[in-house]
Length: 113
Image 1: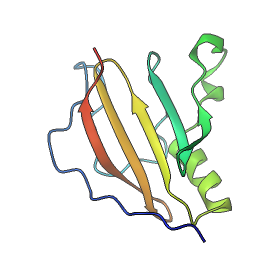
Image 2 (image 1 turned 90 degrees about the vertical axis):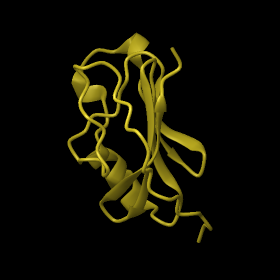
Image 3 (image 1 turned 60 degrees about the vertical axis):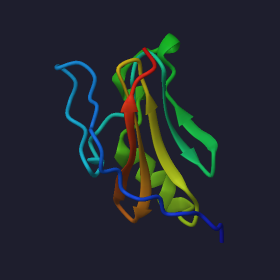
Image 4 (image 1 turned 45 degrees about the horizontal axis):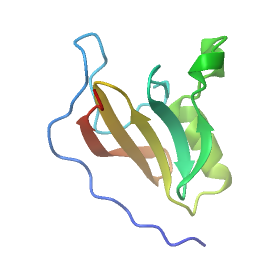
């Protein structure tokens, strides 16, 4: 069993980027697509990338993972630090899996631009 630290829920300003971007929720919804277009979006387990967006080779939205896909991967190996990390030009956020089906917002910052 891996020793991982449950990070505290983020309670600051929720940067969402442009006005057309969806709001940043406290818990990640299963239908949320993991993607940013420009930057990095992926699923990480104990700091190791399990899946990441491949925008240069984009062919279909079916190539994108959702939170449900991340949950399915985490269910196969649950005793680890699973995170969804999204770093874009206008906002960045990290959700950590803290219980089955529960991905909690633990980081939310302005993006890199």
